[in-house]
Amino acid sequence: MTEFDGVDDTLDAKRERLLELLRRCGRVAVAFSGGVDSTVVAKAAQLACGDEAVAVTAVSPSLASGELETARELAEQIGIRHVIIRTEEFSQSGYIANAGNRCYFCKSELYTQVEQRREELQVDTVVNGANLDDQGDHRPGMQAAKERSVRSPLLEAGLTKADVRALARMWGLPVWDKPASPCLSSRIAYGVEVTPERVRRVDDAERFLRETFGLRELRVRLEANELGRIEVPLESLPALIERRADVVEHLTSLGFRYVTLDLEGFRSGSLNAVLPVEQLSLTMPGSSSD
Image (tube, rainbow, N blue to C red; front, side, top):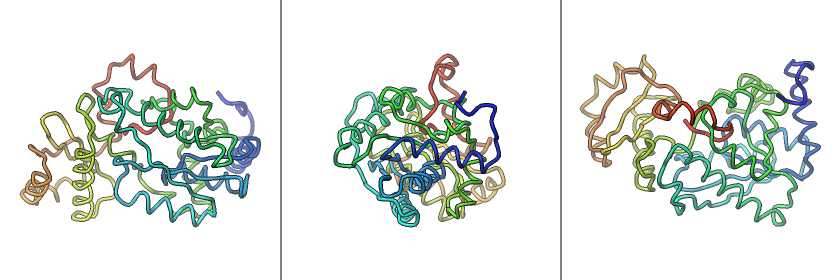
């Protein structure tokens, strides 16, 4: 439920509600990954708050190749001040253990660092990119947001994912059709320790597959016993099967012990299937858990 339930739900009305919410926030820091959600919030913050808005990007081993460069380019296009913070979630035992609440520790680290820099950043309110559709997903990072009074203006203004993409297109943002690109740690199966080496291996494998097969959406999941499980759209399966020897050779050279191709194809959040139902139902929305 939001304060705007029952009012005009056209895209123009939602846009104006979003801008008004951000104006009320004063000086705003946007948790900015360069994905479509946070980019729309950053654009809205710049429109609503001008020079009193700042985009904050967290950098750690879990950030996929090219994402920082994309974030920098988008911030420059939007015209918003951009600050990069190096986060240390890999030093936290709860994060490394990679239980179902891993994202909680990641977001806690980011929000804590922003909180400690409030005076330096000159901000009153921290906001994230959670939208209305995120409420039904497994996103434990929102608990960290709740504990630190981080706002979710897209959700509060009643914007769905489709609304966010439409608004991004309206504003001429090149990420309007960008596939979801959650952190690399989300590819590591729950219960398998998250390490810089493992996420780097996943990043290298995904980059190889993307460049070799021209894929936009794919995941390389790292399961127990160093098994690499590849998810691609169903129509791309034949191409990988045809060149399976090349794929196996490259991924094993990166350190995967076994390589398997998932016949169900690409699907966001497939690792969440192993989580208990009660854990999924009780988890707050908010951080990326792909």
